[in-house]
Length: 295
Length: 275
Image (tube, helix red, strand yellow):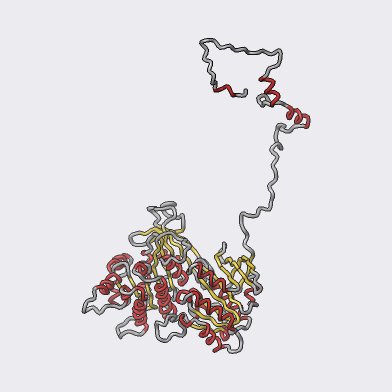
């Protein structure tokens, strides 16, 4: 599913890459930029987190004429007087204007690195409003955004995820170069598909999807064989059929069936009987506690 | 400067990667020995150092640096070191005197909500004047370096996490990207990790934000098993960028012991007390 997203067939969508401190999503973001540039698309990058040199590192230089970097990294808050782009200019009208300057005819791909910077200074509702307007506006073909999910509360992250048509959450994998991507894709019909894939990014920014993650400890396909304890002994523990029958017929000495009980209690003729007549010195207690025993 | 730490980081005063943002962090432990290392390292590398020291006095750092073979007073006289002694400067903010027009650097103490723009402007003026070409007697120093000890104390002074992150972003822009210098910041956390609640406007969120901005983090912790006389703790090294030769060695853990004149680092389980 990751490969399909990289091919960028989804027009008018909003792809969100979520990362955390343990694994940076910027490598995957650069792979998406690289894939878009290789498809001859015009890519506009709104750079807030990293500088232009750092973002362009690893991309091939001949595609740079299609890559337009809007530098909001140098002075995002306008502390010096000549700032190319401040974070407060993050609005759909300003961004559409920026995009139209360089690619008037073709709708471009807009990459925002990162949305966390914007969300720190602009209210989430305004950001979501801007993103929605950009999606519907027509000047933008696709929006790809990077969000650091551990920098915001769950509510804000959830709101931005709602807007996205595809969300890729990246986490570190078990082995060194690998990472785990959890992908949620919402199609126009409303169907939601989810997937988990392990991938690694090579030095030339191509993504290799490795496999689905194996869930250790859950599936044990081998059935346990019943072990026969009477096999392989020097003595015989098995029974023949006749011996089994005789064993089952045997009445155990202290297991009382009802017939045996009545025979013992009410002894028949010929067996002894006990007659008891208490003397004067006998302690004959009317309320003998053992009286109600049925033995 | 600790030679073992240099070999772990694969740097030396003669050759180190420029344009790096190094984050030192600790949790219920004390990573200030790393600040002393980086201070002496960059002074020995003949860089222009701007040191924003908010928690200790100048004499403290001077005493420790002397044991590491560097004299801070000499560096200050030569113009190599610009030292902002936060403790002293804050007094002049609260008790302004006539002759002391005062640094505007610590003016955020009066109005923490306004942010750290004035502190950034102080940093910018300190590092930029080196590349502006000083007087005839000015020596040529290497790329500028900003050291901060420590950033989390700004939170206790009433500054918001967002303002501190903006400040560190601007320092990174000016020092790392424009001037190809390095930035080293120390952030301290108390309490346990893994707080799910990202609404917490505390040192955890600050550390996460700075980790996202940095390319190398050194995290100091005590041993998980408790106090040990021979091993003072462990350091976790985390590289974010790929090394230039394509090798991706993201994390390494070493244990350390602090001595009088240095710190020894060793792989886990290889302490002299154990072997």
